[in-house]
Image 1 (cartoon, rainbow, N blue to C red):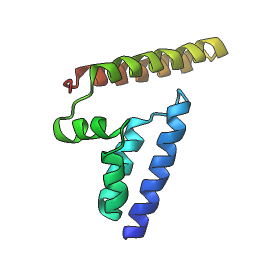
Image 2 (cartoon, rainbow, N blue to C red):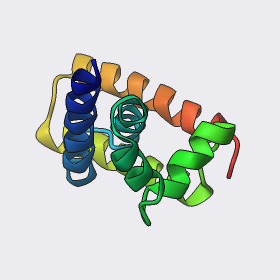
Image 3 (cartoon, rainbow, N blue to C red):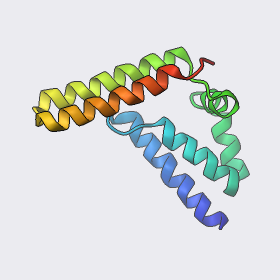
Image 4 (cartoon, rainbow, N blue to C red):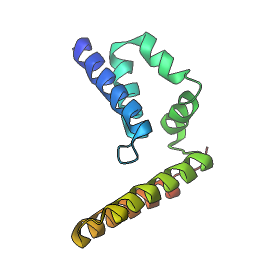
Length: 117
């Protein structure tokens, strides 16, 4: 079972890394999944994520208080707007734009209603 958790953690971490570069793929949910998976499979990788200079404190803020830092909220909001801007630029069908706008608005509300670290 530990091997499955390890593989799932590595897959999640890989998707998080890809998501850091692609505006349409989220980073943080995959990092949280990787942390969860590594806690069940690899103490070393779990510790590495929690002590990572860029992600560690954010992961601990979420685990301890469900909190998101204000700077991360702004960065997420800008990324969300950029994603929607790309969809507008590509000229997607209005139906798809409405679905995307509704989903992104819900995500934005969720992010901004979390406590701040």
